[in-house]
Length: 233
Image 1 (cartoon, rainbow, N blue to C red):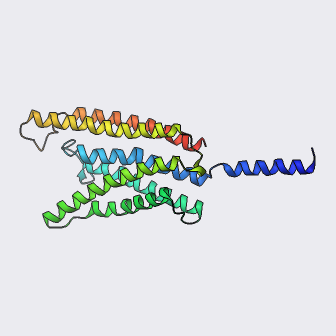
Image 2: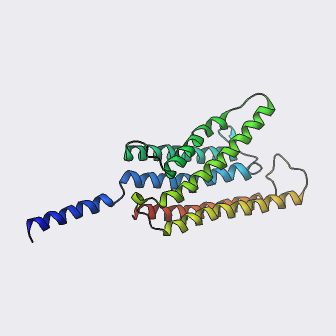
Image 3: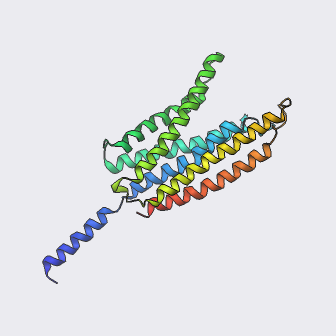
């Protein structure tokens, strides 16, 4: 082999190494997948469907549903912030394309969510308005984050297999199916009627807890599968 051919092979190896996504890029994807497919989905669920479950218990002075909601959403918030730091360090600045623009919009919503969640104005109308805004922005952030994951899979530098489209869709499917199941249980609770005893869990609470556990296990499995594909590139 001539020196010229040897140098050419060495350059090819260097280019091949350069083709692989950086650790920071993969960490960005991993943190976002865990934050949104797992923690955010569960935080959304307990806030929406568990206000009349665990009614006899409080953790650290707050209702159990609110305690779990805060834990899941704080985890989602921290992981999202860490993911943003990773990608900014990796690309050394801002590159304007669909994924980065939607990502920044998501981050803006995420950043103000804890502030809205903790605001407690004295007037009842203001409380209701902030609660509605917190809920709407929370759903908008989830939709944007998941949309952005689909956009991220298609990015050339990520080198992610198209199989991840299916795995991501599966995680979203679990999220949607869980909402359907919880709404059916809410309907059955309303249909059963009767006065709601504040010292007793609402009807079908055991079914709600079981459904939450199934959702948690399924989302955990899909989250791990998605993370594996982030690192396979």
